[in-house]
Image (cartoon, protein in one colour):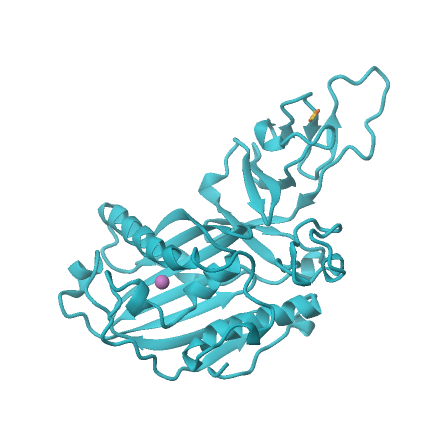
Length: 365
Ligand code: FES
Ligand code: CO
């Protein structure tokens, strides 16, 4: 948690990201945040809002993605309204030009012999592309100490096919993450699809945690629904679901029905207290032809709409800092683990692998 947020500021004066809610920080620093699909970032600048703070992403002539604060140092104009020239970004108002390191390198109206002020710069953020996504580091750690990204070996593995999309939720990103690691809502929220209302019980499960991630698997009986009906038939075999969260903003749900597998890999971009923008990947190892992609896309969006119908009924802002503020059942163990780890990271302000907090609890909250 950022210190300015601890002091109770509504908005952190240091990093600008943290909306303090009851003294806690809504955003964890020193993490890579997945913020966009790489294919969506081109030479046309694109604004991405992170916890109320706008960033601009663009791709240079050399193919590299750059992330800058979306605010011209001159008159606060959004640089995303400008255009890319080579590796630089030109402000649309008076044409100041910014290099990828955030420094202004040209002021067209400058009188001859006038140097560019060293204050003429905007903040820049480290970027990397992995799994077809753009990841931006929002903290202050040097490169060697930054955490690694969540692994997704199936993305590049033979025999798998990916569909990607975006979805906007009416809820804080921590509520969206809690929903996607929630093991017990399918019989109710997804009753019209794959949820089986007559079988709501969740078996006891074990939570594995390592560094900033937590994971749990349960056996899963599904109803034939959507595209899976064609693949699994009218009486689908029992399967399993492995749900995983990776701090700060990634969740993954891995379904297995015998040899048939599919994975939802989700990066939940925190926009504000009641908005989350999710960039999602759906990977499958069956019917890997392109003609099936629109069906997969439609099924994923339908499922998200069902989830959003309940997330939007929750209060705005992050999940409560105090675990006791809401009542948990043992079947909520993975979600509770997420809350615990998030709170722990916020308290120690994660800094290096040696300081990684761990959770060691089982499923009981
Ligand atoms: Fe950007 Fe003036 S506001 S150049
Ligand atoms: Co759901």
